[in-house]
Each structure stands twice: as structure tokens, then as C-alpha cells.
Length: 265
Length: 271
Image 1 (tube, helix red, strand yellow):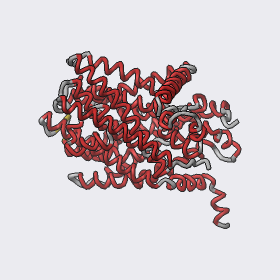
Image 2 (spheres, chains in turn green, yellow; image 1 turned 120 degrees about the horizontal axis):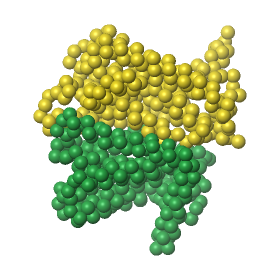
Image 3 (cartoon, rainbow over the protein chains, first blue to last red; image 1 turned 180 degrees about the horizontal axis):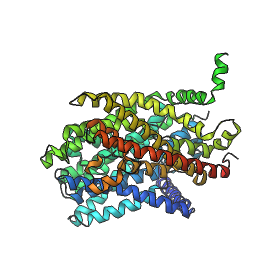
Image 4 (tube, one colour; image 1 turned 45 degrees about the vertical axis):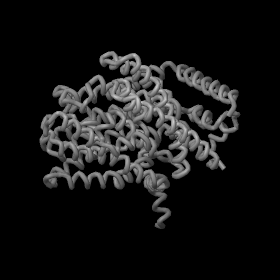
């Protein structure tokens, strides 16, 4: 892919996001309802963690505000995912041939798949309210500027890798089952797992959620980096894993899409 | 009367059987859903084990760690029974224009949509609820009495009715809003939290638990699981059943009135 192609793809992707924002804010009444519902859902983790810390000593090694940081990183990461791709809609479009209209455009497959028109607009509300509570929690924990920068970089890269991984998983699901029905359940498992430090699950499950179903690279490890719990070597290793997950997902998406046959005939 | 004529005379049963065939078309969904339910229950057990050990206690608000294990197997078993499928079905009908087309058939749309979605719930109950329930029974230190089992069944039936009615009311919003996926999902999350899907309601502050017991949410998950575990007494369970039955009647009346109002505003998205 040439530099021009990459620039064109990024520009196209950016315009799709602008279009999504404009579309979302067209129906202001619905925006108000969606924001209210989305904000209510965002309080879910706050309530859960508050109750856990009020009846017990909480999660081993993590203070109340540290666990809130972790939990709202997952909220933000999951909402970025839902705002970027809608696995159910994507598989439906593949089954009924709707994707074919997208694929004739002169952009890369991954760009086109990440620019599908029907994503989940309520996710904007989730991102906004998630970031607000994340900032509130961050104000109550101590960290250095260097840790914050390291956290932002690792979290951003981790979120991109996680989105690409879910996209690969969605296309694989279409190839294997012609259905995306179970993806919602898998993302629920990832969301539950990511809300708590991976260390409490034991070595095997930690490894599972780091490399096989990599929610950890968009939640647990960036949080550890923020709180200064990751050594330079571990930090580099996690960044390397994020790059490998993103690269494998990217290549995997292209490989699977070469075998794609439209369900629309 | 021939078999074919008999089936034709029960159009809702025909819809039911179509729903079963439709649901069974994607068999892998069930296996993966069973796996994900087991995984979620397992994760919750690991999380609470860590919390109990870190707190250095054997009981939180009277709930032991072993009861917590059983609680989560029960909750994930019951979550599959009260699968909130109705809003999704209604949204699809509105978006595709099928809701208007449904009126050309001599059938009532609310019943059509109910009979179309019930097979999904039944099959999930059979394939996911049953194995998880067996695990919960095996983990239970004492056998469950037949009276307790009866209470649990009644509570689940009422919980299912309430979820269906709330689902239908959310589904009706699709007629005005077209896309209700976000609202349905948000509502489902709130119902899970307030219904005890995330943790037993006994862990909530006392005042909030008491208020919640007057809402339609606890009967969906918490009350059946707590009845099974003996966290709530038989008389408390019966009180909860009565309160929830009142909610069923109230929501049924509101749903019927709301449907009468919105059905006149249905426009076909299919052109």
C-alpha cells in the first residue's frame, strides 16, 4: 500500500466518522434519550465496585479508585469497539449481500469494514460518560506524567488492536457459522473479565485474555503501566503483543476476505 | 381432519414451529452460548473467591463463598430462560416493514411476535439453563425441597412474563424510534444490575434492597436464586411473588393500552 493509499484511507475513515457524528446529532430528541440511557449504563460499574468495596476489602492489591480506572478503561474500549464496528450488522450485511456495495469502493478492505454505515451511535454517549468517570477516578490516584504518557500510548494501541481482533473474529464467525449471534456473548465475557485485574484469575486465564482473547491489552496492562507496576521490559513486551495482535488480525482479515463469497448470491 | 388442516387451524403454533426451525438453523450458537455462560459464571466465581480471600472472611452479609458459587451458576442458568429477545424481533419487523405486513394476516401482532420469539427462549432454557442448573443442584449442600422447587418455578414463570412485557413495551418504541438496540441493551443492563444478575441484592445497602423488593426486577433472577439458596424465607418468597404478580397485571394493562395507541401510528418502512 503506497503513502497516498494510506492517506486516502485515513481521510475516508475520518469523513465516515464526521458523517456518523452528524447523523447521530440530526435527531436531537433521540440523542437526549440515548445519552441518558448510555450514562445510566455507565454508572453500572460505579455501583458494582462501590458495593463490592463497601461490603469487603475489595480486589486484592487494587484500591477503589484504581479499580474504577480499570473498569472505565474497559467501558471506553468497548464503546470505541461498538462505535467502530457492529458485528451483528456486519454479518447480516455479509449474509444478505449488503457488504458487496461497500467493497466496490477504492479503499482497503479493513478501511471499508471499519466504515460500515450502521454502527451503534449510542456508543458516543458511552465513550463520553466513560471518559468523564475515568477522569474523575484518575484525579483520585497518583501517577507520574511519564506513566500517564505510557498509559495513553499503550491504551490507544491496545484499543486499535482489540478492534481489529474483534473484526477478524466477526469475519471468522461468518465463515464458520454464518452467524454473529454468539459474538455478543463473547464480548460480554471479555467485558466482565476486563473489569477486574487479570492477575486474580490465575496464570492460564491471564494468558488467555492477553493473547487469545486480548481484552487485557486494552485494559489491565495499560492500567498497570499507569500505576507504575510494569517494568520497562514488561512494557515493551505488552507493546510487542499489541503490535503482533494488530498485524495478525490485519493480515487475517485480508486472508479471510479473499475467501469471502456474498450471501446475496 | 388432516394433520395439515389441524396445523392451519392453530396459526400461532405454526409460528412457534417456524421459530424453532429458525432458531435451530444456527446450532453452533447454542454450544458457544453454553460455553460463554459457563465462562461468565466461572469468572464471577474467581472474582468473588479473590474478594472473599482478600477480605479474609467466610461470609459476606450472611452469604458464604460456596453459596456465592451456587448463586452465580443459578443466575447464569436463569439468565438464559429470560432471554430478552422481543425488542430485537420487533425492531427487525419495524425496520423491514414486516410489522405492517403482519396486519394483513388474520393474527394479532403481539401474539405473533411472542410465539415467534418463545422458541428461542425455550431452546436456550433446554440447552443452557439445564446443564447450569444441574451443576447448581450438585453443588448444593442440601437437597432442595419440592415446595422450594415449586416456588422457584412460579418465580421464574412470573419473571419470564415480566421480561416479556417489558421487552414488548421497549419493542413498541421501535415504531417511533426505528432503532431501539441501544435502549434495549441499556434497559437489559439495568435490569441485570437491579435484578441481582451482577451480585446478590442482599449485598446492596439495606434501604435500597428493601425498595428494590417492591420493583419488578428481583423476581427475574435474584428471588429465584435466593429462594433456592434459602437466603430468603418461604414467606418472603411468597410476598415477592404477590408483588411481582401485581406488576404483571399492571404492565399487561399498560402494554395493551399503549399498543392500542401506537398501532394506529405504524408506517411501513418497506415502502
